[in-house]
Length: 84
Image 1 (cartoon, rainbow, N blue to C red):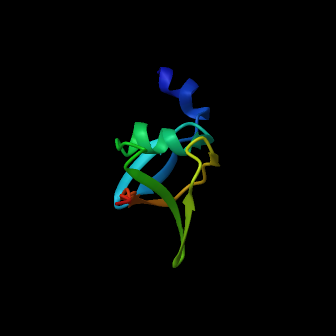
Image 2 (image 1 turned 135 degrees about the vertical axis):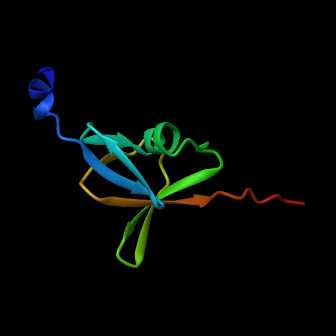
């Protein structure tokens, strides 16, 4: 019955697109969400928090996000622009 001792750890549920994830950390960096959860390359994708009809795009991958229950993130393609 070790599960009773672990009960204090609250899992925070969040979403990237339609995919559901859980974390026990109260803060995650943008890079952690992209690499550890979404399994994408931060050079190719950026992370944005969906708030109603708006999006807040994170430009600094080292930015720390305070995780809250039910947060919805979306991924944006970072298409490199080539100068000719």
